[in-house]
Length: 100
Image 1 (cartoon, rainbow, N blue to C red):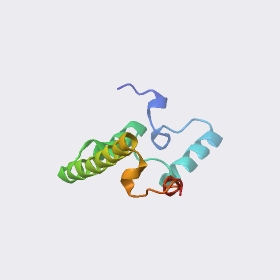
Image 2 (image 1 turned 135 degrees about the horizontal axis):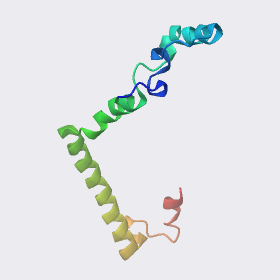
Image 3 (image 1 turned 180 degrees about the vertical axis):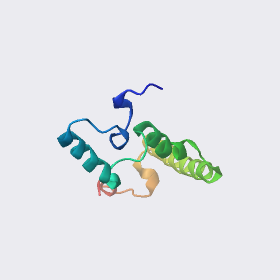
C-alpha cells in the first residue's frame, strides 16, 4: 500500500509544515468522536455482513408470510373469477365493503 496522503483518514495524516494548517489538523484529530474509526468500505462491510447471513427463523417466517400472500392471491383470483357474490354479500352494493 502506498503512503499517498489521501489514503489515510484525516486523523492519521502527517501534520503540515505550516503552523496554522498544523493547528487545524491537530484540532481535527482531537475531535475523534466525530470521525469514523474505520475506512468507509470497512464500515460498509460491518453493516452489510449481518444482512447476508440468514438463519432458520428468517426462512420459517419467510415461508409463513409467503403462504399468507399466496392465500390472498388465490382468494382474490377466486373473487375475480366467480364474482363478489362469493363473499356472502348478495346486495347490489356489495362492492362498498371493498371501498371502505
